[in-house]
Length: 518
Image 1 (spheres, helix red, strand yellow):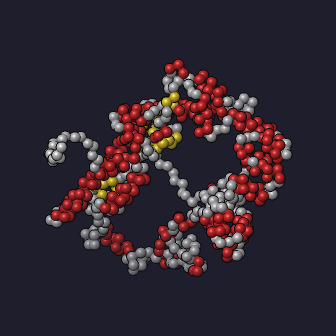
Image 2 (cartoon, helix red, strand yellow; image 1 turned 120 degrees about the vertical axis):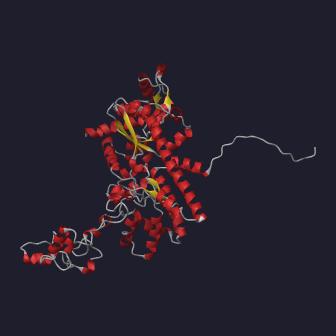
Image 3 (tube, one colour; image 1 turned 60 degrees about the vertical axis):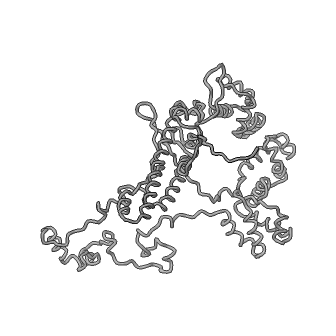
């Protein structure tokens, strides 16, 4: 068959996402901090886009932007003439202001504290220390004080160790090796390097590297530069002079301690039950993460996007947090003034800026409305949780909320991403309210997976050392409460909550009961 070129008319449907539509979707799933950063970047490029400020910041200005002033011609105002005559009396200087030193001399009073701005300059007590002590008398006025200058800076773990190393390692070569070890520390204070490889990389002997490491392990905080948990505990016990042979065996068998195998530990350590409990008490007092107190990251408080309050009619009042809503304005007056120019290029640029600014404000309003719709529906669905607690948390999925507010599931997923709701029960992420449904016994109402986990945790906390619940016992008790759950699911939930098995819990609870009885 001979190939040939033909023309066909074909009608198809396709979903085309414009750049603005993609930005609107990204704007919907951003946090309020990311939204503010995005608006700041847009404001740098768009002269028509401005942040709105509170009215009290511009309260001192007149309506036309100029400050009010007194009239210079005083002949038409008798009060103004009287003030001029009073200012020309003997109580005032030629400059028109009262002299504090003159008032102090002629009157039996001290006006230095009343008129601090008019007092004579205060003599410096130590001029050479002015740059170090701003609070020194005469160093400056109160308006120049910066509160941040008086706040202690956060010391990192590496800075804390760098201050100690010169006192324990006088040799320059040893300091270089120590600095390399400091650079290999993780956030918990553990040394993440093999000592043999480090010695080869630094072109030093293994004995010298081990000697430097042993010296570094004596620094503060105790346990730093350890290469394992056992070594970290051993370093701290040695500094307390409690690293005897029995304690050494206990530290070397931490896996038995994790399994609560106290019988084997008593046999290996050669101690009775009372001594073993004392050793376990000392282990509990140690710090397994010595570098955790020197975290370099700054903890930031979570700001809720939605606030839920109880209303007077018995319902719930859902509102957006005004602190997280960006305040954006479009400067229409500036646009009208500048567009009067006849430059076509300027007019085209400003028209494009106006469209972008209007689109951004519309997208922000749409984002706020969408968050409000999703949050209101979540509050309506989880009304029992807000009233009674976690046990009444209903199973909920994205499809249910999407159908209720007539939006797509992907939109609800983006809204609930990294958004938080402040309720009378506490601060929760919006995704917290979406849990898996667990069927009930005899066709009753289904239960939320989070509510079931809460019930399992409550049952385990209430058990006694003599009656520790197994997974089968928990299944039977949940069935009595109307929850149909398999044993493997109970074990999965228990392990996810970092709860030990019934055998391990029985050993630990009996040991704790004996410790409390001594």
